[in-house]
Image (cartoon, rainbow, N blue to C red; front, top):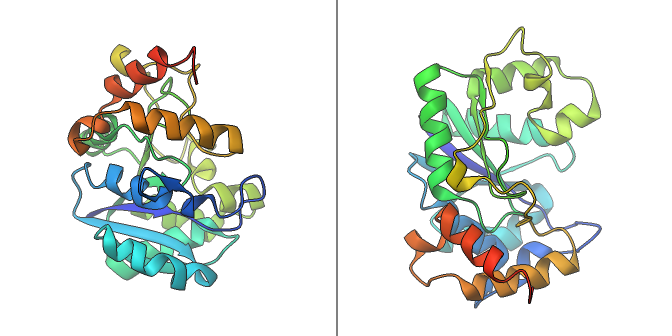
Length: 227
């Protein structure tokens, strides 16, 4: 079973409680979940620290996401908790900083990962904040058992792609229509948030269209002069 697992928290140092900042008429974390609901999957799960459950639970329910609470700092173990709780064979990893995930690219990279039997798959050359990672559950469980570096546990997947001799790693260049590595669509700072508000307003209202990669790049590129 494949599950989209979205990590989110509230205590960002550069932009505190950014997950709850409005994007349009809803909190940003709901917009992230709306984007991910456009990616075909069997389960949709929000994985958050235990101290965020009361805040995130109604938002997850609104977006038809399940909830999994785990460690705040050991994000790798939080993902593995979701794997065990929901009996997942593969996860599509996403983060709450990224309200403009390319749903079409997410579907495509996961399909490639399944075809290849890849332990890890992720496109390169997408705009920063537009992509997801497709990861075999057993590979993450292995990383949980073996990884000792704090960076491996906080950032979830580095243990896998730092050991390509042990894991089948697939990191292809994204198709040309999605390539724009010079662009940024993540929300990490107040400046990012201001740009995200403008970009959200510039995109079509239809959700299936809103999260198509080419349209996001087109809107961002067209608005560069005023963003």
